[in-house]
Structures are given as C-alpha cells and as structure tokens.
Length: 226
Image (cartoon, rainbow, N blue to C red; front, side, top):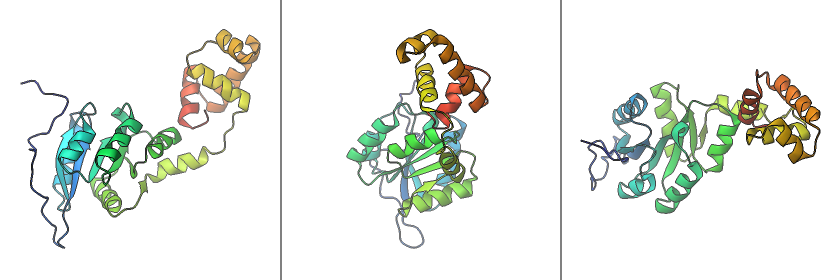
C-alpha cells in the first residue's frame, strides 16, 4: 500500500498522556523528522528505549511537521538538518502552532555556515550524527531542561572562521561565482578586468586549498567567509 509523505508508524492520534517517570515527571513527547531508513529507525528505537522520552510521531521532511506537532502535543522535534529544505519556514510555523515545542537538529556537516543557519532559525540544539546514543540522550535531556546544546566541534569551527582571510574584493568575486557567474560575467558585474577576476580566483583557490573554483566557492561558504 502506498504511503503518504506523513508516516506515523502506527502512532495513533488521540494518544493518552505520556506515562510519568520514576520521579513523577511526564516523559518528553518527541517527533522525529527524517528520511525513512536506518537513521530514523535507530533514533526512534533509542528514544523509545529511554523511560523519559516517548516518540509520539515520526515523519519525513515533506510532512506537515507543525500540524503533526500540534495534533500530538509534541514537546521536542528532533530533525535531520541535512534533508530539510527550508528550516526557517519550518521552525517559524512550528513556534506559532506549538509555542512550547523546541527543535533539535542532527547534522553531519560541521560547518560555520550550517551553524549560522541553525541558530538563525532559533533551534535549541545542534548535535552531530556520529554521537553515541547515550550522549544523544544526555544532550536531549539538557535541552528538555531548558539548556541550549551545540556540538563543540561545530562551535569551534565557527570561532576559527571568525578570522576571514579573504579581502572584500575576493569575497565579492567568490560570491558572484557562487551565483553561477562565469569570469567574464563577474568582471562585468563588478566592473573589473577579466584578468583581475582570474587573479582573484587564483588567490581564492590558494587560500581555500581547493582544486577548482567550484570547490573553492563551496569551501568559502562552508567556512562562513562569504
């Protein structure tokens, strides 16, 4: 039978309140957002095995996450950042529909650009995909207590990227290249000679350690330089 974009894996609407833990606190109600497959299945299994979490829904990124969170009284959305198309739109609507709900992102991309994207969307946590299950639960518990948790290696990369080695003109050339412009088009747009553009691109290759202009642009973006 064909399935829709919203996959609830047998978790029915109208589910009763999550059972309290040993200290009388209700379990944190979680919605897991990610592509169907191993990662999402592992996340659901890890969370369901913990007494202080209850996975009340799971969906792929095309699902109506805010609507689902509202219907299931979700406390925490755990989402795979690497498959989300429009994170600000998702979190903005989610916070309007379920104001108390917090968002934690999993990512395999430890880059300053990714961190800026996440923090700009007002998420409560950014966690690397390669953390052990026990550490994931520890981070989510801290978030549930009101803390903000950021993967330390990602935070370190963001700090290191604060020193931008590109000049203003090199950033302009790189930004134009990121828009898909060719050297002659960049020269016309920035009122430069084509040879000057080529010189700036050569410098960009050297400073990023890239093998070609496209790799150089991507590295500059990931480092937060443009």
